[in-house]
Length: 174
Image (cartoon, rainbow, N blue to C red; front, side, top):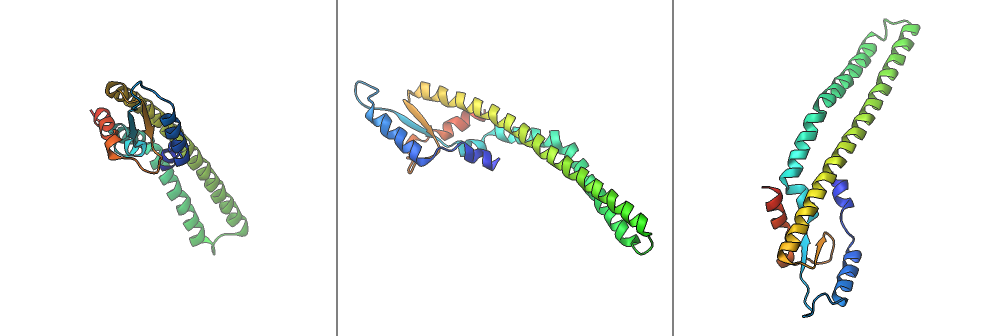
């Protein structure tokens, strides 16, 4: 999730260019512009939607995760059994059991990889939904409060006076 959060941050140079362009282009007859800022990092850390999505995903994947853990224990058990029986086994039996262990390990690796891919895909789906909802909330607040532009992340300095993250969170957490 952390890498996803970082991928949504704008670089400070892009924000700086956008601010400069915004200040150069007049938007109102009186020449003043209303600017706001939202911390997407805080949204993704503090919004109840995120906590709900994480719990939902954990529940969805818990059975599969437990199965993977049991498979890992099984592989370990088979390995320990081979180690304990090493002196008693014929060369042919040792080879057969080593091949079985390798097959079990490969299957476990494949299952883990498929699990991670499915988990990542599902997390990305939930994240996309959360971002879509939060974007709608940000737009609604911007329209209600008549902001000309709302930035997310980035920037060298953000004044708390223009930070509307708390407002977005309060609406998201209702």
